Amino acid sequence: MALDSTQDMTMSRRAMKAELLDAETELKLAYAWRDQRDEAALHRLITAYMRLAISMASKFRRYGAPMNDLIQEAGLGLMKAADKFDPDRGVRFSTYAVWWIKASIQDYVMRNWSMVRTGSTSSQKSLFFNMRRVQAKLEREASKQGETLDRHQLHQMIATEVGVPLRDVEMMEGRLSGSDFSLNAVQSADEEGREWIDTLEDDSAQSAELVEHSHDTAQLREWLVTAMQGLKPRERLIVRERKLRDDPRTLESLGQELGLSKERVRQLEAAAFQKMRKSLEAQSKEVQNFLV
Image (tube, rainbow, N blue to C red; front, side):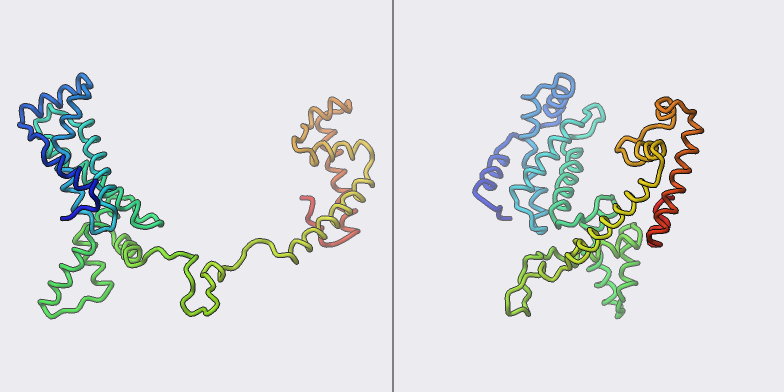
């Protein structure tokens, strides 16, 4: 399979020329990295199996990602495998590394498939990479038997075959069948060359709404000033300190300042609000529920 660029080809040729490790040498390098953090041993181990990473990366080119990026992700997976590999388990490093390399590439492909997140769970990942293949197989088998599967039947059979919930199949079908669409694309039927973004409704406040809001705010402020003027100085102080400050004062602190108990301050506050309510109701029925 041809690679994307001269750089890819150079990397591939370099990997193919790397040494082939026998089991004993591989084990020695793995121990050196795990126990001594020997970077030279790690480099040798990674270099020897980079051909495996490149080979696996090439299998994912059909998803449209640049080969160079796929190789980089495969290399990251290989490095993760080397870091987590336990040579005491008696498994060859190449066998262990395959899973990490594949997982790294798959995560990259899914992240870059669409601006909309395609999925992250194991069932969604399994569907992303296997749904089309399983669907084609089921349709071939049904065709041989002279059957025609409707969409619901097909989704149910895919869910059973892959071992995932039906809702995940339906969700992935929608994501794989669609594609990202730019709002800056020109409408094909529009002769003036308008973009799709021009058709979106502006949900910000309109001029009329702003004017109305400004008028209502000014009117309410006027009513409140009038209501406050009807209070006694001590009541006005309590309302101002309890309700109009960014950092409201406590009943106890006001009681200490006024030489009153907390309960008496609370009673004065309630009485002040009752007076303000009556004043506001007298001025307009629109604010009957302003003070709750």
